[in-house]
Length: 242
Image 1 (spheres, one colour):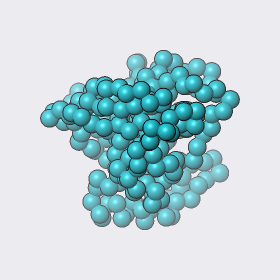
Image 2: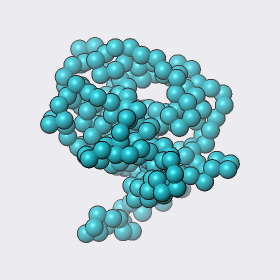
Image 3: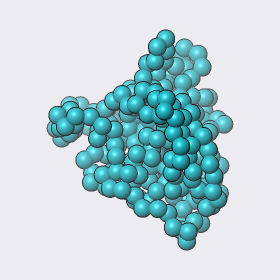
Image 4: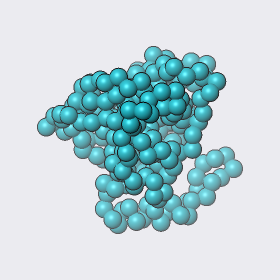
């Protein structure tokens, strides 16, 4: 979600909490733009109210590089695939994103090569309920998303990804994008995304093309990261030691 950071919090204490979560889990965060010292938490997505009971939701295993599935291009979801199974899968993606926590997640990150992403750019930016989920989330599940228009104006964000732990890179993307997509029931939609929301949705759609942020850096930098990953050891408290 890959994971991307989910927006800024209001107030200094909330900003500090979001930054702390980001450092602990990685993910997509905005670059410090001129006059802006705040960091946003990671990207891989939140959720909207789905038609699946929470009793059936599951937290899925997130794949990390160099798993070859992350480099594969995803196939479109067919007309006959919409229904209970797809809605449940979208719900599981959302649960997995929230558990990270993140603001977006794509199907290939959990080993499913269908063109489906979930996003909630508001995740990690508001007060949370007793289950740890943000209140009033801006959740969307996007099936077979397509960019039909993009602005010429660009913006740079420092992005991270759940599938590329402990790695961040400045990425330049269009500031506004117009997306055509289907929801979990197959109903068509079109929506403009702007600013951080545009960064989140573009980051997740990269995964559908088999692209992670590690593919946006030099071969030398990528090789050094992968070499370091092979030496990672998980401590008893769950943190990583190199």
